[in-house]
Length: 385
Image 1 (cartoon, one colour):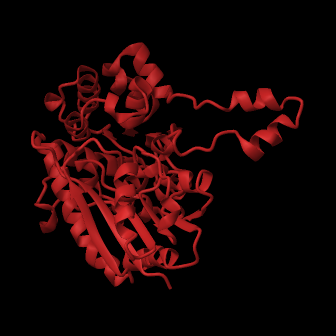
Image 2 (cartoon, rainbow, N blue to C red):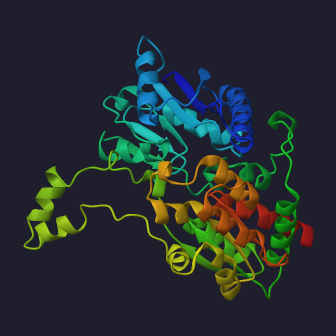
């Protein structure tokens, strides 16, 4: 059995951070500290938080530096995650990652190979040559396509697909009022809309719109997990993992195979470039303006949960550096339009916040339209009983 080290990466809030960014950073750090003991209980030999202020380094550069530090006789098994990752995981869940990291070399286990939040590697040296990946989501793809590592995942375990990327996630996951998380409170409007959403989920005559990076397992669960009908717009799954740095080129055996067919070269060219993010809902908002969101939702459903990062990617590209700043995004998730400086996002948020009270529109990230929605539905069903 290989010794196993756990690295939990955490970005401290910058000195000029707004209240939402600072609250989220503090909460994620508290979650990371809570995770340390749980990883040790799961069998890891050591676990540490790698924290620091934003310094412009990519995830890939930061991880490569930590791996170099491990080579002085350090553990060969390695588990990598972010400070907001898998807060709903239990010790037996963590033990599966530890077992993978301590097993035979050349293997890796992710919570989701298509967009990872935690990755266990049985041989840290497999990270040699790691490029400056912008985020951890693309790590399994790089390991499989560039480093030749066999990657498996646990994406059927929905709890392991939930992470904390916005203050709203803390509220939806029921973590906001924990003492360790500094008693973050639920804004009144969010509380009202969550209650209204519970009513919709429990109503056989109602219809819910779910839009964004919705997983197939979530859609399957919704078929029997909620009373209402569900309309889904599934768009841009794998958005954060689609880094070209992680993808293999159409070279070597793949290219040879393609060019062995008469149509091979044309086929290779057709799929060689990644298509930029696009959204059907985003197209509607381009045409009618962000203030039209509530009107479009009302024509389709009685309530909606919307992954707005897909809309931002549609409008400004996949790199979040071109999106409205984090403080604005988090205020939007809390339906606090008055605190959003970006005009487009402020108008979108005001439209959602101004929807009729009984027809709620909730805005957030992928956790909201997947594990968060499951938790909300389960609570609604328990109350209905």
